[in-house]
Each structure stands twice: as C-alpha cells, then as structure tokens.
Length: 102
Length: 484
Image (cartoon, rainbow over all chains, first blue to last red; front, top):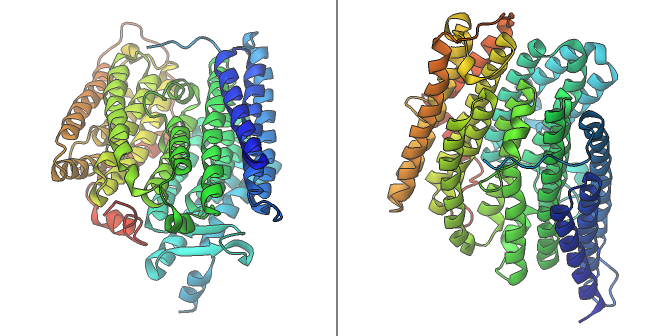
C-alpha cells in the first residue's frame, strides 16, 4: 500500500463519515458541516489520485478541479448558512420538520 | 449570402451561455427595469437558439473549444441533436415562463426573480452544451444553487424548509457524482466524454463510478424512492418557479444520466437497466396513486411529475434507439404540459386565493382559458392522441413489444389510467359549485394565454412528429454504446 492509495482511502473514509453524519444529525448546522466534510473527502481523493505515478510531478488537472470544487463548495455553504438563518427566523427551529411519510 | 455566412460562423454555443449570464447581471444591477430587460434577454436566447439550430442542421454537430485550448486541458462545448432539442425546449418553455412571471410577480419580487431565473437558464444552457463530465458537475451545482434560491423566493416557513431540504439533497447528489468523476479521471486520464467513450473498459473502479454517478443523478432526478424532496419543493414555490423546476430542472440531471449511459458507461451496464426500469415503473404507479390522494392542486401536480419522471426510465431496460427517442419525446411534451399545468394552478390560486381541489368553485365558467389549458395539458400527460405524450408512449410501447418485454406496456397503460383519474378529479371539481364561495380576484389575461399556448404546443407536438425526431438524429447521439 503506497501513500497515494492511503490518502485516497482516507478521502473515501471522510466521505462516508460525512454521509453518516448528514443522515444521523438533525441540527441543520451539523448537516451543513457534514456536507462540507463529504466534499473535503472527494477533494482529497482527487488530489491524491493526481499523484499516482511515483517520482513524476503530480498531474495538475485534478488540482484545477479541486480549486473549482472549493469555489462551488464555499458558495453552496454560504447559501446554506443564509437559508439556515432564515429558517430559524421564520420557524424558530434549527431542524427540518419530520418527513410526512405518505 | 453574407448573412448566411455570418450566421454560420457565429459561435452560438458561447452566446447561449453568455447572453443569459449577462442578462442576469444587468437585471441584478438595474432592478427597476428587470422585467423588460429580462424579457428582452429571453427573446434574445430564443433567437440565439434559432441560430444554433440552423448551424447544427447545416453543418452537423458543433464542437467549440473555449480559448482554443482543446479537449484534454481546456473546456469544450458540444451541440448535437440531443442537446439541441433540449436547448430548444428550454428556450420555448423559458420564454413562456418569463411572460407568465411578468403578470404573476409584483415589481419587488420580479426584481429578485429575474436575475435568479436567468442565472439558472445560463447554467442549464451550459449544462446542455458541456462536453466533459467535470464541467457537467459545475453546471449541475450552479443549476442547483439558483433553483434553491428560487424555491426560497416565497419566503414563508414551508418554502424555506423545502428549499433547505432541496439544497442538502442537491449537494449530496452532486458530491456522489463528483466522486464518480474522480474515479473515472483516475482510471482513464480524461474527463472529456468523447475521449472517455473511446477508453472506457469495465473494471471495479468503473463500476464504482457508474454506481456513484447514477445514484447522485437519480437523487437529483427524483426517481422513486429518492423522490421525497420533490413534492414539497415544487409545491411550495411560486407558480412560475414550480413550472420551471418541474419542466426543466429535473430534466437536466436526467439528460446527464442519458449522456453517460449512451456514451461513457460500458455496454455491460445494460443489466442495471432492468433495475432502473423497475424503479421507473414503481414511480409511475406510486406517483399516480399519491397524486390521486392529494387534496391540494399543486401537490397533485408535483406528484404527477414524480410519476412522469418514472416513464422516462422505462427506456433504460429497452435500450433501442426507438425507445430513447420515445422517452425524449415524452420528456419534451411533459416539459410543456407540466409548465402549463403549474401555470394553470397558479392562475387558480391567484383567482380563488387557495388551491384546495374540493373547493374549486366553478372555475370552468369563470376561468375558461385556464381550465382549457389544464385539460389540454392533461390530455398530453395522460397520453391521449394526438398529443406529444401519446407519441412518446406509443414509441415506448412499440419498443417494449419489439424487445419482447411486454410487462412495461402494462405499466404504461396503468400509468395512463391513473393520470386520467387525477386529471378528471380536478376537472370535475372545477365544473361544480363549491360549498364555500369566496371573493374572486382578477387574473391577468397574459397569464391565462401563456398557459394555454404551452398546453396547445404540447398537444400539437403529436402532429408534427417527424421534425423533432429528425433533429434528434443529428450527430447520431444514439449510435454509441449498446443503443443500436
């Protein structure tokens, strides 16, 4: 097992951890954080797999993708936080109402 | 001749993205004039699509390399018959929604609606023109973010919680998709769809990528059982937003799935087609039954969208080019019919101040145009001849019998019966007098006519079948993979 593979595995681990937290936690701030952890996991996978040939200089394309991805993640988080504040102001709660399973 | 040459050499693909983007910024900076500016932009996009259509018909599929960088490193735009048809549909429905919204929103809301809607339109056009899977991710996120902001536009508690749930679901779907992109890039060293198509070979990493990307996109397309977020989001948004979400936004992720399925995923993925077909069939029945049970008109229409999305997935187990075209025909007529239905619902809501189906008070006599629009759209969604919905279902039926998988035909017929039941339920209540009568407010004529024109277009689509089908074949989007 080389380092690249180890990093990629950690990335997948972060992704799974985030997914678990997203499903389990009800507080919206925790959900938003969970999505961010998931995103970091994907970025780690991308960057790690970019350096797959040992010795050679890393592939720059995944790095460009991660930068784009970070921009997207920041804007999405900003929107999510703004919405969270509005939800709290409007309903007085920081969680989503239970699903009405019909 | 000179005009012809300049139309041929204009990069319409780029204009199709830049025009709504610029329009959105101008509307944002000049909120007082956002309505005329927005409508002007919408007309401009329609003109631009005419140019692109001409270009693709005359010169075949178009590929444009932004900045001249080319496929491995730069971003390519690609337009063939499939993307062209989706773009044209977006332009027509988009113009209709624009006109409708100018009557629906008061000035203050319109100043917020137009920038967001044009941003969404730019993202949608960019998505339909993208030639690489990473660009598809970015456009998918842009689309999702502007759609969430539009859902929250109503500003009440229902709309805000629906928007929040929609945002989380949308981000989750995109991340699954992105992880799949990472795996595909790792395996084949490219994100360009055409290059991937040539290199893909089955391997464990590819199967993981296929699973992750499909799961993310199915969540975003709201295929049963991942549809839970759709009815609240689509029903609590203002009517023009519901129309554009149900008609256009859910189709975007379906389009990506279709592209990947046809060109990138290895042919042996066909086995998973049966699973998708099964989920689609369940969606048709479940969505139909739920729609029938609803007491509020907008929720009924939203569940109808869940059911109609199911039909599109019936093409996956069949996999013939005839089946794909049938599904796309269904998608096309559904977009127009569903937009018209949500607009009609918006008119009824404006008219009576509520959308409780049982209390629809003689809408037929008092809003004849709106009810005509709802019924015509219903005809197309039920799949009665001569509507566009009929042609799509007929093609799917034909493909099902051709492949000897007759059970899908049963689903098509049962889905049609369920649709008929819930459309007639609404129409029935609209003709009778309700127990509670109430003050009615005026509905602008423009809102009624837009709904009617779109519904008529969905029905007329059944009479002009050869033209869209010929457009679909440009650039042979259905020749790759196992489509045959």
